[in-house]
Image 1 (cartoon, rainbow, N blue to C red):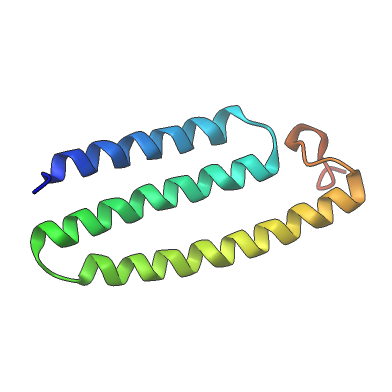
Image 2: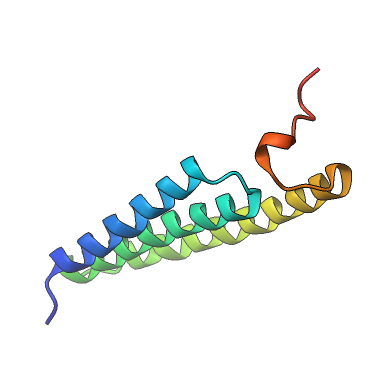
Length: 100
């Protein structure tokens, strides 16, 4: 049986990779993918603790997080498509439509 430490280490690596991707990258689609990576790291942690504790509360919460992630992906992709139609770019630095 694999110890919980290995799951937590993999989850921490995935989460840190997502945070670095959000902070470094300027493409909106890549930023959304990094946010999804962070949510998947959290899901891995929930499932690991749920298995370790022997209850299903963490696994139920994973379904809630997956639902929120799917909604975020749908709304985020719609926003990116709308911005691309207006500015012909998905680069975050070039999108300044909220500025006066």
